[in-house]
View 1 (cartoon, rainbow, N blue to C red):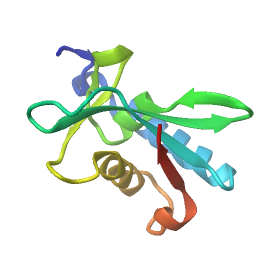
View 2 (cartoon, one colour; view 1 turned 30 degrees about the vertical axis):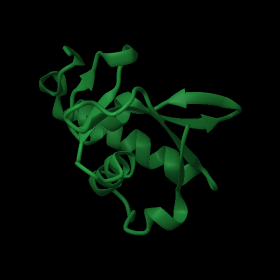
View 3 (spheres, rainbow, N blue to C red; view 1 turned 180 degrees about the vertical axis):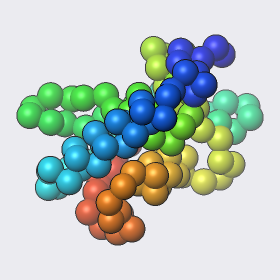
View 4 (cartoon, rainbow, N blue to C red; view 1 turned 90 degrees about the vertical axis):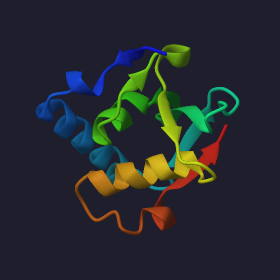
Amino acid sequence: MPNLVSVKEFTQEDIQKAKDKLNEMFLARENIIIYIAKRQPTTRSGGNYFTFHVVMDGMLNDITFDIAKAIETSLNDKMGGTIYRSFGNMDMGFQTLYEMFGSISGDWDDWQSRIKYRYI
């Protein structure tokens, strides 16, 4: 599957802007829930395609592209832009969020107690 946007296209400025945007978004809101959409059944290789969303001001916003930049991974062309993850038996949506919160600035060591996530 071809990449919609390759990680090679991201500049360091793009990556930092995405990290800052995510950090500010999560700091500015209480009780935020990240909705993870698994876009297809697990592949034969054990991988999954995900999109990530949050509700802000009554609107569902796709934050997949910003997360892809923050964790420096390509945005796959599957279903219009997904993050492909393969971690074996691990919760791959959680792993992606874990990597994202580890990459953005700020004190996010306790993100699991501050941010909720749900699969949709």
